[in-house]
Length: 409
Ligand SMILES: Cc1ncc(COP(=O)(O)O)c(C=O)c1O
Image 1 (cartoon, rainbow, N blue to C red):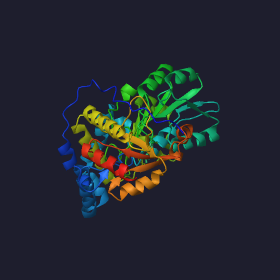
Image 2: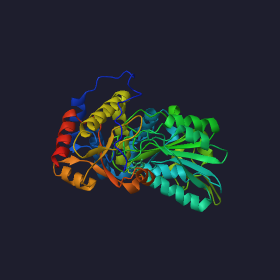
Image 3: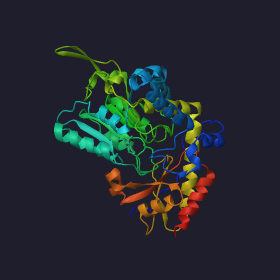
Image 4: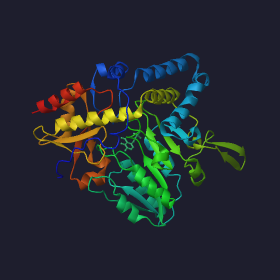
C-alpha cells in the first residue's frame, strides 16, 4: 500500500491575477445545489439554469415544429457551439468536431492514425482504461507497440524519461491531462514541447480538465484533444468534442464516413469535408449540442483563472480537512493538484462510504482499479472514494462533508 500522499498547496496560478468570485450567483444559477451536496463533478457536474432552459426549449421546439425544422430555426445556436469551443481552447472553429462523448472524440482521433509494425505509442502510467484498451487493440492489429513512460517522484509523467524514450519510431504521444482517479495534473505543455521538437503527433485526453482549468491548445502544443461536456464544463450528458489541428488533418483518415463527413460525387468517388467536421455524423442530439454551446458560453462569462484557483483552493481545503481524520488516507498525487480529491478509509470500502454518504444526499463516486489499472496497481490500490469539487461548491459543504465522513465511525 502506498503511504499517504503529500497535500500540495496550489502552485502555478498562485501569482495569476484573478477576479472576485461570486459564489452566491454560481449557486443561484445551479438548481441542483438545493437538492444535493454534489462532489461528483468529475463524474457529471450539476448543470446551470441556462443549460437546462436551452435544452428543454429545444426539445419543446422539436416537439412543436419538427426536428429538422427546429434545427434550421436554431442554426445560429448550433453554429455558435463551434465558435464557443474555439474561444475556450484557442483554436479555429473549423478545427472542432462536436460528438457524443470524450471517448468517441478520442477514438475518432486515435483510430484515424495509420500505424505500421514497430511504430511506438508512448503513454503515461495513469492512462484511462478506454484509451489503453484501444492502444492494445490497435497494437494487436498493426504491430505497433505501446510503451508506458514512468512517473517522476511526484507521480506525474516523467519528462526526463519521456525525453529519453524519443526516437524516430515514436508515432504518437497520447496522455491524459487529469487522470480519472485523482487530483494529479500531468504537465501536458512540457510533453507538448518534446512532441513539437521531434514532430511527433500528440493527443491529449482533456476529459477531466476541460472547464476546470484554462486549456489552450497552442500553449499545450497538442495536435489532437478530446473533451466531454458533462463534467467540469457542466453541459448536458451525451456531449463532447474533438480538436484537430489543421496541419495534421490530412495525415488522418477518419475511421467512419457518412454523408455529413463526406460528399458522394460519383459512382466511384467521394470527397471528405474540409475541417474537423469530417469526424462527425449527420445525426446529432441537437438539444444537447445547443446545451453544450450554452455551457461553454456560461463558463466564458466567468474568468477561467479565477474558477481554476477557486477549485484548487476548495480541493486543498478538503484534503487538509480530511487528512487528520482518523483512518482516512488522502490519495492524490502530483505537483499541481486539481478539484478531484481521492481518499480511502481503513476498514471501510469506498462503496460503503459512497452508499452511506448518499443517504445524506451527498454525492461522491468510487474510482475502481480497472479505470486506471497501471497506476492503481503500482500504488496497491483496489479502489478509492472520489470527491470532486467545483467552483459552485461552498466552504460550508466541505465542512458538512468532512463531518459526514467523520460520522461514519
Ligand atoms: C480521463 C478520462 N478520459 C475519458 C473519459 C471518458 O469520457 P466519456 O464518458 O465522456 O466518454 C473519462 C470518464 O470519466 C475520463 O475520466
